[in-house]
Amino acid sequence: MDFTNIHNYYEHLVLDYMQTELIPTMENPSSDFLLDVACYALSRLPSRYMRHEIDMAFYMSIEERTKMIEEVKVAVDDAYEYIFSHFNREE
Image (cartoon, rainbow, N blue to C red; front, side, top):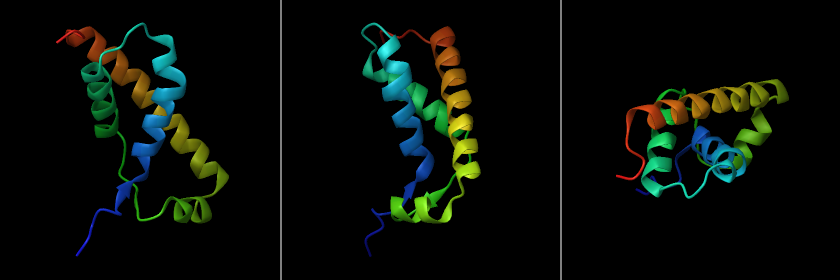
């Protein structure tokens, strides 16, 4: 049985926010640092699993999606601050 089609919808939202809002503000961010930020943020968000992204778009209200995006912003921004202040970004 192939389970590779199962994804956490928040992964898409976190990575999208990081690529469009966070990374452009950083000078030469390391991959390890960014991966740590993503993992830390995702660990603090609820899980919302799906098989197909179109399913989420069809079944989710605008209010629910807006709330999820705001949760992602807070989680990623908090994760950035935590990782930045507690770990060496160059390692």
